[in-house]
Image 1: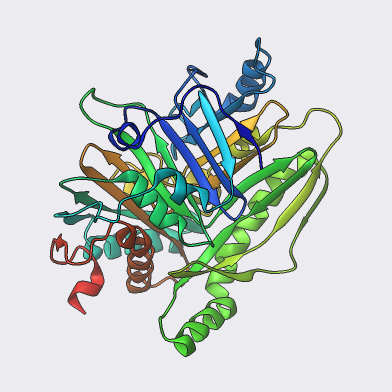
Image 2: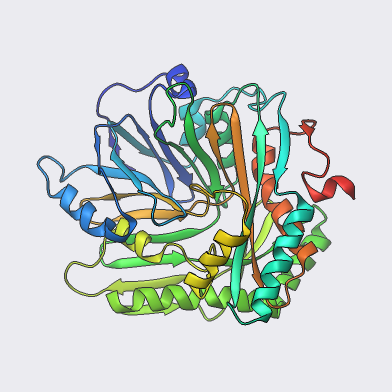
Length: 402
């Protein structure tokens, strides 16, 4: 556990109204919370990120600095990487203590509507299956959104609620405001580690293949067993593992993946996951941010082959993913750091939150099942927003009509 206080800590009202720029990660690895901005990498490029990060750390008085930030889904969008004014590390419970959240509903008097509707999303899946049948690609990940218009949003409380699930990594990042009047931020809780680096050792834990959990213990166990035995889901998972192994292999003297996918769970979902471990070759291998940029986007959020899948996403999806299905994390001057795929998240602009959820489409996918999977993936964020009883557009979620 380390602590680097630089300057005075912000108070809760400054954090809540966005007057002080915030970054937070909290999960099994512990918590990292950062306040303020000292300086940043300007004109950052995903394709050149490792080079730019190395050059930045080569500047004066930066040997002990930390960079935090995020990579958007679209690789042509400039990543956000900056040096915070104050950084604090602690255990996973620190996020709740640090923000001292109120227990009021952070999205009280909210209205929710879908973009696209569940029915239209099912049609999108059908379109993707037609393209798969024609041999245009083997897998594509299609996302859908929910817009939440809220009277007020208590972002620290949302982040603390999300962090209560010990199986995920909760995150909060203030993004550069698009207008002076509106706070722009990203908040969520991801189950997926994109890449971690400590010295020469690197780790990744890709997830692909998912099923909704049940509150009934027997049904929940059966759902996990069905997922683990599913040929369709194991095939989808294999695409991701093969991609990551292929991308990392040129930089590693050792690289190995687990013998097969294992079940991993969050409070609401089962996933297939594989632990990948490697050792970088001697010399200067990519740092953590560079490795994240190298791997992003994986087939877990894009598809296979990647370029064809990304083209299909651009054609079929009806909304901008923004920082959903991107990456969030930190890196230091040694190249160490942790980066996570930005899943189960919402992008906030003023009093509107846009939630995203996606599903991997391969041959044999069923549109109704993919709608149900995305419904289930929305649940963690909806619970954190205390949206029980909210005024929700009829049909925004498919379970409303069941």
